[in-house]
Amino acid sequence: MKTETWGIRTGSEVSSHDRLIGPLRVAITGGTSGLGLALVREFSARGARVAFLARHAEPVAKVERENKNTHGIVADVSDKDAIYPAALQIVGELGGLEILINNASDLGAVPLALLADTNCEDLEKAMATNVLGPFRLTKALLGALAASAREGRAALVVNISSDAAVTPYPKWGAYGASKAALRHLTEIWNQELSVEGVRFLSFDPGDMDTPMHTLAVPDADRTTLKTAEAAALELITAIETALTGPHSSKQNREEQRV
Amino acid sequence: MIAATVPLQRSPRAKVMVVDPSGQIRDLPRTALIDLIQPGELVVANDAATIPASLSGVHLPSHLPIEVRLAGVPSLDPDNREFSAVVFGEGDFHSRTEDRPQPPSLAAGDRLQMGPLSAKILHLLDHPRLVLLEFDHSRDELWAGLAHHGRPIQYSHVPVPLALWDVWTPIAGPPVAFEPPSAGFALSWQLVTEMRVRGAQFKTITHAAGLSSTGDPELDKRLPFDEPYRVPQATAEAINQAKSSGKRIIAVGTTVVRALEHAVHEGTIAAGENLATERIGVRTQLQVVDALLSGTHEPGTSHYQLLRAFLTDAELERLTTELNMREYHTHEFGDSVLVRRTFNKLAQDIPSRCQHVANLVCSSASGYRLRHRSI
Image 1 (cartoon, each protein chain N blue to C red):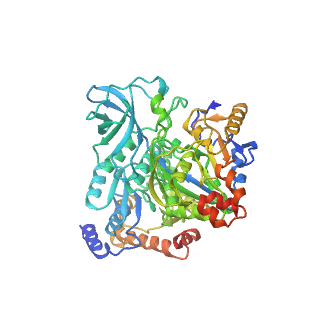
Image 2: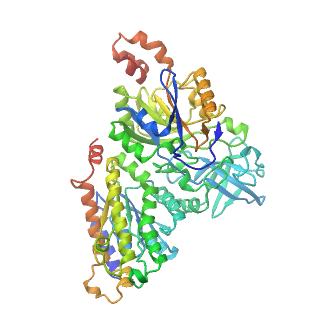
Image 3: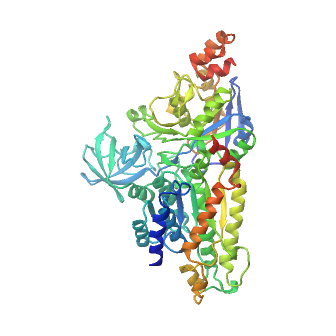
């Protein structure tokens, strides 16, 4: 209920004015719950065209119905064979791409466990979803992103991070290690491809009141948690800063001037 | 030449045979490519991603199995649902296309079911196996159907089924090609970023590369079919600038040559979308492209014919002899050639006459190449 009110409010307030976000084509993984869903709604409300991925057909169809200019794609980012077909659908349906947000994440062992009690399979699952999936999807979509950069448009990959990527919290081993790897990849991608005008950003949304947080910390006091909607707005602000700020790449600025 | 049978885009053993503007031939490892690109030169590649355009299915009127190979589109309009297609009978890529059984007799109005996708034959395109298809689906349904049911078009020289990642070049973006623009397999991001660092430029066009072979002699004679392409503004500007300052244009792939030589009018490349209808060959006077990085091609193919715009027949024969002698690999996963244009019909006659004439007269009379030559 809360999110629906939010969606309508935001939509009517900003949909016709958002010159920066409105023209963008955005791909979001994990788009049917939590932060991913809030992002799909916010980008859609601001006039952007959105392709989103999630594993289950029913919620994908529902989110697509409820948000204009969105394209739902049923795919599991941890499945190697699903990535290129999903990339085909993303670029085919949107006609190009400016922003990729690797948001879909896996906690590893649930309930959270000491590493000594974590099954290899749980670590593998966290790595497949949080590291390999974003790596593969970025590779598959890099051509479309670099084409945007060459043509003077935005080209940005946002990888959703966590404070667990930086601080080694006990019981968050599988998740934390995978997010640390993702954060490291993000920085190296960014250094290697800055000459192409493709930028990479790690974004830590903080502790949010999402289904994943409930899985991790079932007895958390939800009133102390940030809403996914608030985190989505912060992320979009971070994207706006990245696209307009002094750090936007040299080549991009030069091409935009042409 | 030897068929490359392993789907490996950038084999560490890949080679490139270079033909210099003087006609001199060199045999180099492909890793040396970066040293062959000079500061100021502009490298233009085709950034099309490849659609999994082979669809197994059933011809509903006869209930007989078919393979449909999507072959072309009239435009790059993303809402397009009409495709030209070559229809094969039963079987798949394991058989040589020449040996494939004929499809059932096809007629306008026939319906085809291909996994989740259904389509109607609008009409035949002057050949019993070449049809214009209209799909029944929304754009999103069509992409989902292609993503889940389509397979990359492939030929019997590669025995393992290809995955999409095998046929997407590293720079693959818009999915509009029906076969990979495979000259781009030689590109790596290392090469692309390094050439920028060294002062060369890298730009792209998007060209909907179609079928390279159908196995039917009559149809093969009609290849390549018309192919839509798009030249981005940034690419058009870079080419026009490079040309006016006498910098060389290196095309990665025959599709880039076809598109750019079609897009040039009175010496200037215009940005935007168009349909490449002409074939590049011995009669073509190249106006834009100075050099071509391509795969190796057997005599008789349309790709081989295209090289005749760059080289004299004697040079082309010598190149083919060298490729055979040095055991180069051919087809999409094979080795490469880098051919600098060794002659130009206009350049042979006119520059000597123009050298002392005002530059403007030459450039307005015959375009880029002369302006470049007569500076």
